[in-house]
Image 1 (cartoon, rainbow, N blue to C red):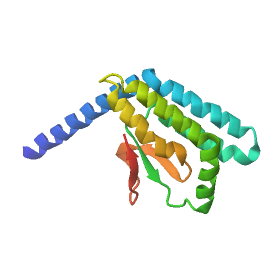
Image 2: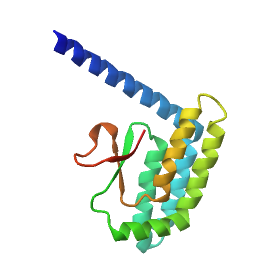
Image 3: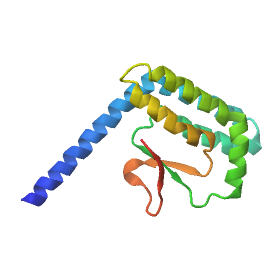
Length: 155
């Protein structure tokens, strides 16, 4: 009987957590997520103009989806990332990462004005490192973190 009770408690906790993440994502979308995602889409389209920078565009589109609905997602390092990702991150930071990080910082300041916005502002600040260096990172569902990987950031 106690195993059934424990399982029911875990299921209830998971449902509550899912509802809380959904609520936070909706608030996030309304109060900054849409505009942040639009910034990532802009830089992604810009990067896709030249064939050599398409990987940057793909990374930017991935980040746009993450910026649109971040709660319940986890950032993990790709074990296959190497020197190419590191060099690409330097170029990314100079071309787009710095500007997107400023967008996150500006949005975080605006969100922190209200008590309800403080958790959103904290999430915005937590997104800045992955905004600056997105290559070599992967965005996964928090419930499906690949075995053997350590989460870098979790929302």
